[in-house]
Image (cartoon, rainbow, N blue to C red):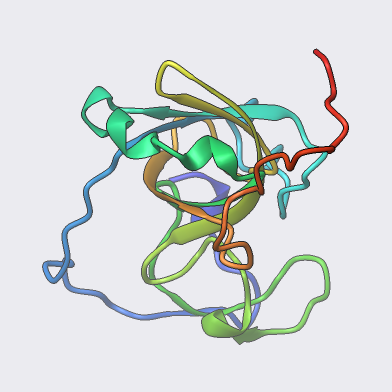
Length: 164
């Protein structure tokens, strides 16, 4: 492992048996500009760089209707994260807190979530802004914004049309 295997003062780990109680089906791969955790942003920003969610072909039909949403939630497996820290010391503030009191990628089940801006969908690839994960991260799921259960409203008669 890299520098992430080192413990900071007051951090504590637990001994874990191999996980055997759940199975995830990855539905694709995430493409981002970041290949090193040190370069990856701590939180995604909706004005961040364009990234891609590349769906495996078998799941592409599941995208029908998703283009009607402006914001989607992306769930991904942080496959490079350690899973044994029970207490962590974020490097920015020097205090130690429990893993569940942080949004750190270091957790027993390293599932990441981001609310992202959907730019477009092309051939099973979603172009988005707002991610905060490494290139090649396995994609778990995609959902419409939980605060916008209804798609964008279709234009009404009399609405101003914007030409492209």
